[in-house]
Every structure is written in structure tokens, then in C-alpha cells.
Amino acid sequence: MHVICIINRQYINIQHKVMKTCNAASDEDIYSDYTDSEEEPISAYEVQCRMNAWRPKDSLKIVVNVLNTQYSLVRRIVEEIFCYRTSASLREEWDLLWTDTGITLETFAKMKTYQKINHFPSMNCLSRKDNLGKNLMRMRRYFPEDYDFVPPTWHLPNEYGDFRTQCTQSKGRTYIVKPEAMSQGKGIYLIKSHEELDIGEHCVVQRYVSNPYLIDGLKFDLRLYVLIYGCDPLRLYLYNEGLARLATEEYEQPSRYNMKNVYVHLTNYAINKRSENFVFNTDEDEADTGHKRSLSFVWSYIDSHGGDSKELQQKIKSLIVKTFCAVQPQLAQPYRTSQPNDVENNMCFEILGFDILVDSSLNPWLLEVNHSPSFSTDTPFDYKIKEELIYDTIKLLHLDPSTKVKYKQERDREFKSRALGRTTLKMTKERRKALRDKAMEARDEYELKNLGRYTRIYPDPQLEAKHSNFITIAENLWEEFFGYKKHVTLRVSLKKTSTSNIQRHSLIVEKPRNTKRLTRTSSKVPAKEELPKTVYKERNFQRQTMEDPIEVEDLIFPKAKGIF
Image (cartoon, rainbow, N blue to C red; front, side, top):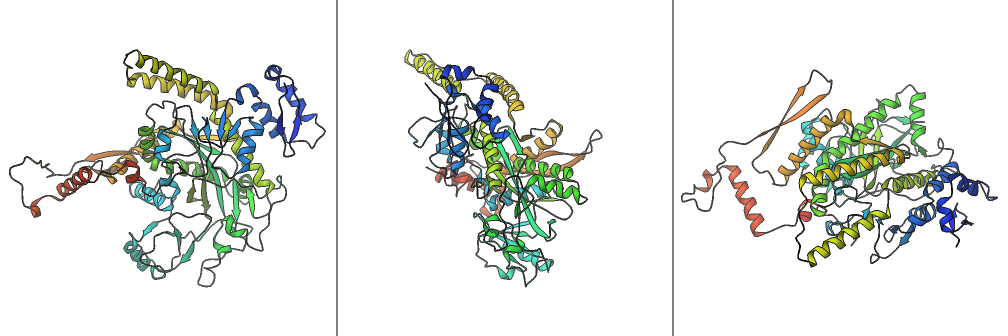
């Protein structure tokens, strides 16, 4: 029996020994098979990928569903490098589902604990521009110094009055208008006054950052790839390489004469590639030319021009962690309710594209978060970065066929117990915590050896206390916003500790006065105008929940759309 492994892009067939012999082969033997070929030599990274992934006996048991992905690169890596079996049918049991669109809570709740999917059911709290702005601006009101990486944002038409006041008080400023849920730079334009807007238009308006850092006189933004592989607790990883997308015309301060020139003020690749000035990369090793360059080139460029790229990278890592802290409760609550038996916190993962602008003072500004960054490969440079990114991500997932076997064995034991009339004892909190701790130890050990080009940025033991306070505040704000805590108001006090230079934020919960709760059995009900306002809110909320029940998914994410 021969095993055919397809390597390179030319589909070279390499014959090996029988399956049993292949599994026992050393890395040196496999390496010699690749390097001794008379065909075009492959990179050392690709050789290492195939050496690490050469496990035919186990890999053939892993099924990856690629029904809803348009990127052939994903299929190629799964089939040719990892030698996993792909499927395009939802009826077949799969271990990994890779899709280009979001998923619903219903789909996630039906998943088995050994299965993994490349999206979270509630990630539109970040991926939609309006939700991202609301969540970050809400945190900025309590932590103005920590959440200063997002420009002042208004959501129209709800906040049209506030935006009009801002324009009146600060004349001469420039603002950028973005649609609520569109990508690739569609529908974006600049304005100078609120009078240029339609009052009923649904959009997001931000203050324009008019002093960007320039490369060769051109404005640019950074596309960073962030992997979230666990939301309760958070587990975040930053990829060490990324993209710098440059505009195609020399930057000028926004004025009435150039505000409509998208090739000056917008850095979206989908827009600038249509410009006659756009230069494509033709060599994957030349990442310092053209209008799409590597992240490592940007760091070296900043250092060579008197800047400190190390400090900027630390600011960006902090920006990413704080962004996720602001929405962690919105990610964790649907996850816990849909999959309460997942103690390993590893059924969902997602590669997010963070678009970050750097100003002339080397301060990062978060522009948007893409929940489905493009894996198209228009140039050899694109292909190299995204191939390595997908490979390192799948390897970090640690797809193991034994987890499926254990799941089925446990399910069979439960069926037999029920057939014999035995009651299944509910798992205690202590037992669940012990299982979770054991799973986290094994996971940490595996990740330490298989991070590839990823760097784990959260959890961070040095900043654990500060980030935990961010999450606590975000949880209370979210519960209050959606009515789970009607009689609780929040007040934040800032305390400086003598042992640290950082500010530690503590949450003080207060209950408003004169909020005596009324019941239906009350004999004396005051007149409507005498009731406290908080009581009216409570009774209206109770009446709504009793008479017009709303699904949790519809309440939190009314515009979310899934693939099924």
C-alpha cells in the first residue's frame, strides 16, 4: 500500500513505504524524501510543515468540512500538508468546520464537544462597525485613559443631535462616514459638517485622524491577524507577521479640493488596487516594494527613521486585549448557555483582521475588526503570509481523533445507564473545575511547543488584575444595558496602589433610593404620576418579558445572520 502525498503547487507524487513503515519513519527520512527530489526545491518552512504533519494513520481519521469556504488555499493546506480528509456534506460527521460566514446559536448548540468551528456565534459585537463603536465608547466613558485608542464615534441617526453639537463647537474638523455593516471600503466618504449628512441615514461617524504616519509620503494602515481560541476565559494570540496596505497617491491634509479622492485618504486594498498607480508584488521575498508590504518591513522602517517599533508593538498588543475585554461577556454568555458541557473552552476559534492606523506620534488607532479576513492570494507575497497563517492556526487547534473516540464512549455509557434505569449524576462544580484545570494544563503544554509564529498575548499574568477589572465593568455594563440589572447603577473609582504604577479600577455598585418594589397583591397603589421612574421601568420590563417573550439571540444580536 502506498501513500500519496501532494506537495508543492505542481502536485508531485512521492511514494513511501507501507502505512506502518511510514508512521515509524524518522524526520530525517522524510526530509530527505522532500529535498532529494529533482523538482523545484521547496522552502525550509514548507519542508518543516510536511515533516510535522506527516501522520497518515491518524490524519485520515480527521474530517474537515469545507462546504462554505471559497478559498482554495484552505482546502489545499488541509489536504496536502495535514493530509486530513475533506468533506462538502453536512450529513457526514466532521471534526472541523471552516466557513466564510457567521454561525447561529442554534447551529452552535447542536455541535458535539469534540467538534470545532472557525467562528463564534456572537462575534458581530466586534465585526459590525456600529456595535464595535458602541462597546468601546461605553468603556471609554469609564476608562478614558485606557480606551483612548478609538476615535470619538457617533451612531446615526440615534446620536445625530450629539454629532451636530460637536460640529458646531469644533468647526473645521474632518469626519469619516462609514456604513454600519459593509466592508472593503464601500460607502466610505469624508465630511466637514453635519449638514452634509442625511438625518435618517444609518451610519457610523468618526473623527478623522488627520496626522497619520507616512511611508514614502503615503498613508497606510496595518492588517494584523489575531486568533481568539477561547472566550471563557479569554485566550488571544497575535500573529507575528501581517500586511501594510498603502494608499496610491501622496497624502495631503483633507480639504474641500481632495476630500473625494479615495486614493489619498483610504487605504483599503479593494479600492487602491483599481488605481493606475498601484504596484503589485511579484516576489514573495521582496516585502519592501509595492503598495502592499509586510509588517516586519514597517517595524524596520520606523526604527530606521528614529522611531521605537518595540513600544508601538506593546501599545498594539494592549489595544487588542482591551478591545476583547470590552466584549468578553457578550462572547461568553451565549457560549456557556449553548455548550454548558464544554470544559476545555476550545470548540470555537476565529481569525480576526484588526485594521490599525498609526499616527505621526506612533500611537495606534483601531479602525475596524473583520471577522472574515480575506484569504485570497493575488500576489506571491500574499500567498506566503496567508499559507503560513492558516497552517499555524490549524496546528494550534490540536485536532486529535482520540477526542472523538472518548466522546462516543462516554455517550454509549450514558445510553446504557439510562436503559438500565440508572440516573446520571450531574457534574459538580468542583469536578468541573478540576477537569477544566487539567485540560488547561495540557493545553498550555501543547501550545508552548506549537505556537509557530503566534505569540500569546492573553492571559498575561503581569496584567491579569487590571484586565479582570475591565471585564468586570464590561459585564455589569452589558447586563444593565439589556435589563438584567434594572436597579443597579455603576460608579467607578480610580485607586493608585503603592506597589504598582498602573491604575487599578474597582467597581462600586450602588442601589438607588426609594425604589420600593410593588406587587400585584398590593392593596394601595399610588397614582401613576407619584410612582418613581425606576418602578415604571421595572414594571414595563416585567410586562414585556411576560407578554412578549424574546429569544436571547434576537435580543442581543437582532441582525446576525448565519450560514444555515
